[in-house]
Length: 407
Ligand SMILES: [Ca+2]
Ligand SMILES: [Ca+2]
Ligand SMILES: [Ca+2]
Ligand SMILES: [Ca+2]
View 1: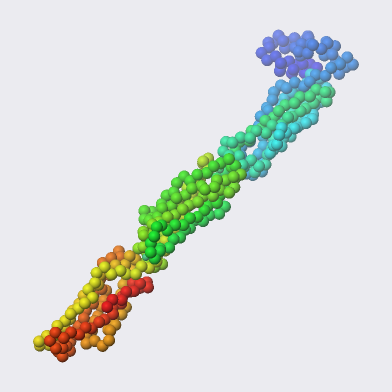
View 2 (view 1 turned 90 degrees about the horizontal axis):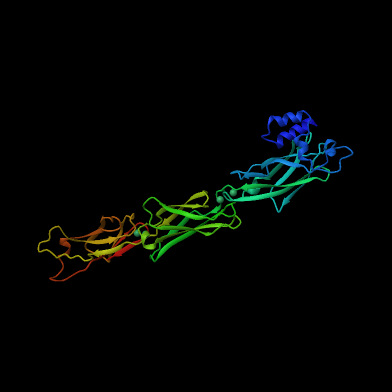
């Protein structure tokens, strides 16, 4: 009885002086009994004796009623927290037990509670509560998003004295980076024969984000290198709902005329980097490659000299000759050209040869030169002002299927 009183005394009279302690040890009526002097003196002197008629409810002396867990970056096992409630009970012989733990509303975690140390001489009782939730169960929380789970814990002294305390555990979210579930990162356009408008392609990137409340946006599109002819735009066309179903759509466009310079099957790859974010520090970067494929364009004549003339000499010596040039262009920058044939129309006295004497540079300024020659002696038979026309078909090609024939 003396130890119980001292303990109780110490707890309830912080700052009391030595005189009080001395009086307790001396067996005088002490503070412990003073505290409960609403009861009769007899009851306090004989707590379990025949004169005892009332039960005293346990008294909380200290309590930790709040818990906290924080979402892990990579969920493993359980997240847990615990706390204790200290109590005393003036009824020295009472034993205590937890009689109920009731979750308030729907909770993701569980809370258990037990009397881990019962009172000794009425003091130092300890109720310990343990909260636990599966780490994976709270991944859905966004960064710093909180959810509070509450539980009513009731314990009893077995004599009708019960105490109910509410434990509130705060769950705090951590950001999860969006996850790509499918992606189309390659585009392709093909040069038209006759360029009109724009050449376009598009694709989508599908993503999820376990943080249910996160919204997403494209943070930037950057061309890689400086030679891109086209442009790429990107936007979140469908955001996630319940964490799934996010769609980022990219659109590539290039002026049809801008890719005419590509030769047949020549390819040019244009790359763009797309960044998007969940607004909470979770970012992803994706690179889209668009392949531009060329189509052949036939050479185009820009100027031409298709007629020659020679006149019979009085005294035939050597050959009579003439020549001319055909200027051409080819928008296919890399094409090289060659004469593929010279064919005389009917029988001719002279001969005509032809060659590409200057090929195109960046598609222009190509020159084909033809040379006609006939033996001077061979035309002596012509009377004064009599004419004979000799015709030749000259063909040249860009080597990619584009041919021209000139007469
Ligand atoms: Ca999260
Ligand atoms: Ca997120
Ligand atoms: Ca072309
Ligand atoms: Ca060509």
